[in-house]
Image (tube, rainbow, N blue to C red; front, top):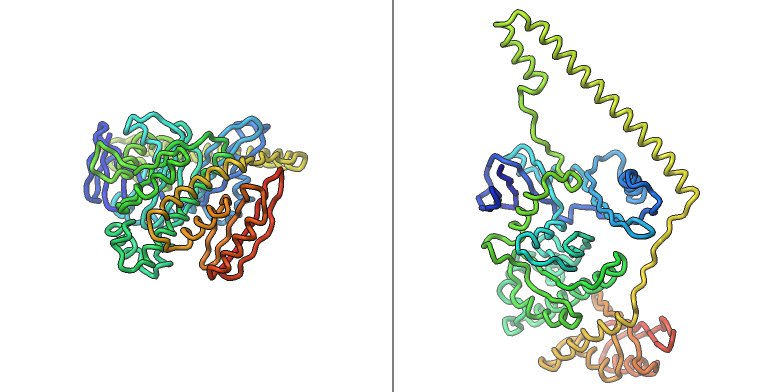
Length: 477
């Protein structure tokens, strides 16, 4: 049986584990596709461990509708990922409005009339291990295309979580250019400063991706703690277009943390690496209804419908005297089936009502235990300080032309460590700690920032605990 994956402009046909690509046109087989993370509401929460496993999905759905503020007048397709811990279940709920599904797959339905299986894009990277034969590790996959960007993480080859990250549309807005123009710049000029006559454009691109990867780093550090993962070992970056020099420019940045950073690619195909992976993934998972977001079932053949049955019997009656009795029998059979379906629906509703009452009683008598995240502060400081040293090496090689280079120089001058760097417009906020536990170092840094022309330089103490002095410094350009 052929399993067909519908991408943006092509179909990928998997027959006997051999995949071929064709222009988007009708083919007979099992029809599959995928939906982007941008169309999904992702709700992360915890459920108490004392819930019976058979009730997990019901309890999760109640939480999603109440805490997720879903509209009861709308229809949704929901998929859950449950991870069991000693004291609780961690739940990832993925919710898609059925109207969004209809809009997203409208052009395909004009050709195929139905779609058997729709997967979630962040989960597709699981098939990387099937295709390459690589041993599963704790891996992160960055997906970056024209419309969306997300970070998808796996533990030993099993999907754990996904988070949104900065989209290229925000860079286009900063540069006051169209998204198409920005992508062309990234493809042709990339991270070679000599290619730019307009240095402001290069600086904006460099700052965007520095903050982009700093956010990825922060998400990984937070998520490793929240999801009780061990260290992420590899990061793969997928993009349907080549960003010139991106991998080489940030490879050392990640190596400082002991993380291998590489392009997501497949050696065994010239097709788009993600689409090829999706074709393999859907071929292996299309029977898994728990992952299926499709609301477009295959139409029932005419002869199996009531109208078809009656039409067939009308033909048969010309040759058989007993046709009248047969029609009555078929009609009676259909009515009995309808009654049986209705009975099952009533039983399901009654069961859910009973479960809801039980759950309400439990929630009134018990408080949900929260598992507090515990991120090691010194590890964060050491990790990011290493990255600052890397940036320091960069500024030794190139002229000091931007704010980040000035900051690295000042931090080194006063032996300060950087915990976080957050820039929004012309306003910058730093979280710093003094190596020698001397707050006067931070005061001298502020004085230098004033002399360098920065405005509204202020500071406030965040913490002075166990001999560690930490302060927040803010300033405007």
